[in-house]
Image (cartoon, rainbow, N blue to C red; front, side, top):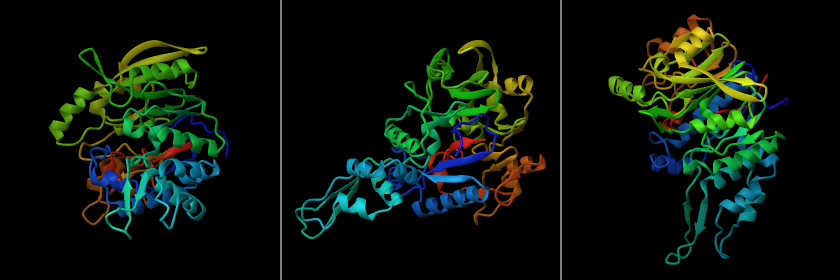
Length: 397
């Protein structure tokens, strides 16, 4: 594999990392709000849906890495099992070392993420109690732990404590493919906020409400840290304030959920001249544009995101409909080729009237994978994200 970098979102996606959800999502299914999910996730449907995504990526010529396999290559899985699983007593017919010798990489990782605790109830001889204790249920959202920029991978500092344990695991996975981590963040930042766009890059940051910072997932200081660290080298680095107040108003008006947990909830890039976004939010989203001078960035000017992209950068815009839940959370495979989720009918079928964004893109000549429709949205998005959130690019060329 070549360098582990991403200069622009429309460059050819050559390799990607995913994690097919396993038993760790059960806790997130049964106690979904605590585990940051929007709704319950039917586990078998989630795995089947994820397989559709990975199959489509492979068919498109993308090298697909499973997180478990990269961890196995790094030699990290066995120790992860030892750290994560509480052994049964001496009367047990199996122990952790037997599991290590017997299980494959996917099976090992599923157990490790589930944080399994095993014990024999004293009152019931001959029976076993297996507990899933504080599992890492969100691990299939691979995007959030890493920013892949023009200089290489940057490890994020997750905002929610329940997700912070994911980062060391992902660090080991990068080592498994012999990638050098460029930088590890101190301030809170998540990968779903980052969009590389050639000579510039966008980073979603905290909202400004009446002069007070409101951090949703990523702080303004994180953007400044990224620029000061030397971990990115784009000519312009643009900090996009989350349009929180407008989002709240539009939620009420359209009776829908929030779009601004991450920037990718309402903005994505199709090609060097085409962006899909929520225009209502973009017009209210303030941006600070920083220009690079040598090794340092300095603030040049402020604007709103819509004017910056259309007037300063010359992008054409496809405005999404509030009737669609995840219209921007697609994965760009290469310029003008994307893998989206579509809004299915009761039978899982595609209907143009339910998917106006995909229909607009097709009219503009954008190739929609697979079959001109995408993949029907089902169980996975109940966790609070789409295909973009579920994939970490390992390289774009």
